Length: 343
Image 1 (tube, rainbow, N blue to C red):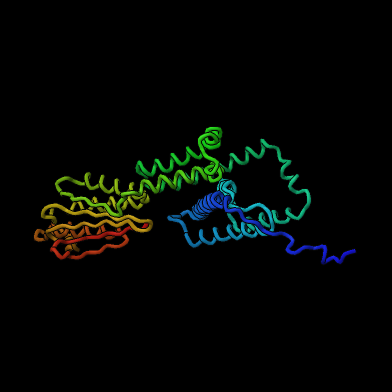
Image 2: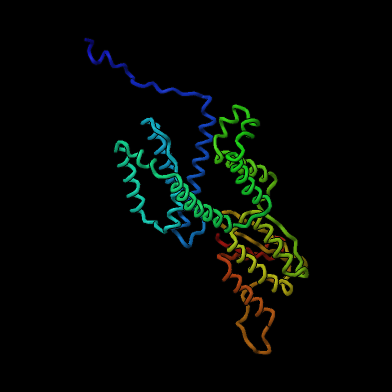
């Protein structure tokens, strides 16, 4: 009998790598990352009634954990991992959000993995029951996603990105024969699910619509035009940049207050500039004439400068509405008032 060491060949398993599978793997990995991103944003919003924006360090840690789990699964030769959106929906529906519950469920699944035949018990659940549970949880996760979208203003381009990406993704499961005919073999290796197809559609449209997009918007406004023209300009700029609806309302109130004081301040036209990003809404007014500054205390005395008093009240209201205000005199002698609102 040959020695045992001679019978065992080392290494026991030689890993192989196929370059042809790499594009499909990368496409699936990108889809899984963005799915994890969305699930974590939905979880953050469900756990924080005052949620305003994604907590990116938390999302980074979650995506890293998801990736390490998939890496470990690959090392032991099992299926890859990813977040499960229906679990987020179930948590929202039941309002069970305690960390210890998640840890207990996770430990339970780990224990089941070491019990032979446990998968048979799970698969024995009737399909109507599974379907009803999935439908119930999915309704809440869809509603959560829609409510997150509703917090942002959407123009026609962003509406097309969201709507068309969703519809094209659904069509992959509804008309699979169509995609089997029109997609080449290499394309079918990339587009492996409705999630991947919808993701690629949204990313492509978003990149297309960003061509020629501007970072700031400018309007030359005359106080004689009234507040309506200024308000419409701000709404169009906010929708184009996807600003938060609540904070846009504060910007609109600032503009309305400035419009009431502009006729007594500005000599000619006012240059209005907006710069909106993920964290700050910034609107600035530049004009020639008198400065908008704190005025005398409100009084009924006959000798008080009413215009200065009213402009001071306006300036005080603008300061209350904005998170930060900056005043300066430009090199050409014009006055500038810049207001920032955090979003």
